[in-house]
Length: 130
Picture (tube, rainbow, N blue to C red):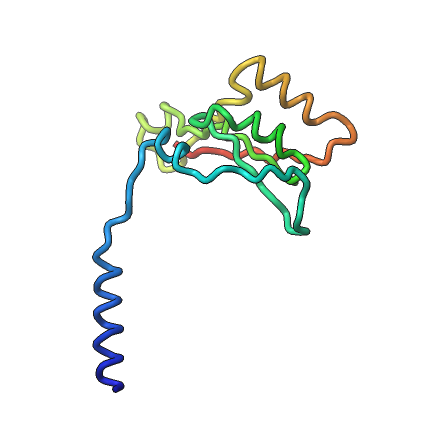
């Protein structure tokens, strides 16, 4: 029976290895996500991090809705770029340029509102390396 078990495990491993992962467009991926829980209070003692991404237009409203569940919010608003001078000169020591920040007055106002004294939310920037 050990031989049969070995054959079955080998077949299972080969089957799983041949499965191609699904690739979704952003809007399709968001649409396929399960409905969110209507409970807005935190039910765990673990630290909860939420990302706000430019490709999900509902990010800020979801943070507003579930703020009591969240500890950290990380907006994807910053990009670190290699300086064009560094690239064109071929130097070994590259110079980097930080760009970005809240993309509009709406996001800037929202951020200031969420950082008011007494807010439990902490903001941690996320840097995209390009």
